[in-house]
Image 1 (cartoon, rainbow, N blue to C red):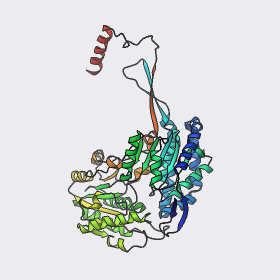
Image 2: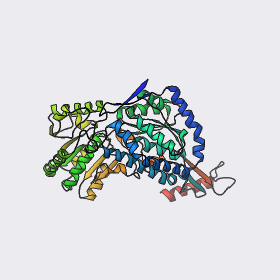
Image 3: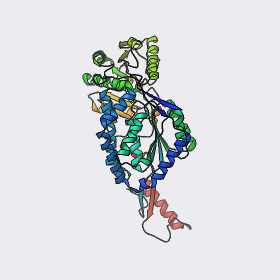
Image 4: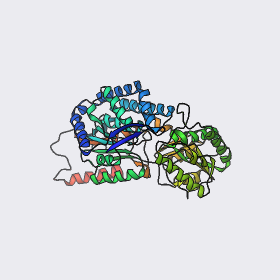
Length: 489
């Protein structure tokens, strides 16, 4: 079986690659396991230096990497820069903060003052990372370096639509002097990913992608009692209250909804705006959307191509359903049927409700649906009405109210008076609640997610016998009763 790598804009055949066989997958696991002992013996700071070297080499070849990313995805020039910038920031954070996040940690013991307590962080072994096509560099390199700093090896299975980005990153890592044996790539479609998940010699799975596939991977890992980190889809909301800065909120909405042609798991898809400011807000969003430059000419445009034809058809299907059920398109809508290739212009929909697929399921395209609400309570209620819970944004000048709402909104990540910026903050953990995922990436929580946690309790005094060891005397029982009442009564 072979895999054809095609430029979505030109339909040019970029490469033909053989899909990984069972033997190749197991052979690469063998290579990783053969290098693990030496990789783990290097220690945290030496591993961090290796990641730093790889990061510097990536930046030195950023234009070359951007060309590969853009050829596989149809991204604009700026979106290619974002891929490099975000990836290098993640690598920088991991190499700088990883050693301290994973160092032995002393813990207070509490009742048993005669003991010492520590927490140790150990690698699992081989981490299988399955990455998507929408951010083919960020979403494979980020999890990979988090797994590697812990001392794991990485078996990477990139999306079948963007394998060349993964192979280029492997090449860059190897050229930087990074130990090539503990970072391996296997190429193929979903069947290859399934083999990686089900391999008993892969100790942990990190998957970024759709809810549907994430469920299947979660079940497969549960059957093996194998840990899984699942970063899944979103139907992300943005709330605009009556005291918000309308200009900032409108610009954030347009950026958050249309960046990367809306092919972002934290893309703004549902907007809830208070009735009293709905008219000026919607009017400004419409104006800004009409100013967005899109179509061929990725060096000059703001909005590039849809990466896959099937995703474009999914978006068109949602728009058709919304139109039949009464939605109004202030921008776009009708034009999507007339576009060349996989380009899709901005769409602003109003008169929408939760009977429409557009308001219930992830769209993953350049579409923003706007609803009016009577107040903050209704906005929260509607934002929380779905099973998704990935990202959310709240716009208001009342910071007390904003923080209260941030605490009550069902999302793993919240921006106040901003949109999407949280993902570039590598220090913050990232992940979803509900069907949007399990576990966290980024931050020290993300690094530690690739580690097994071991607690160690040490005796300090070396007595021949602890008071609670057999036989337990009447005096000890009496003393324990007194301690319970003194400490906890």
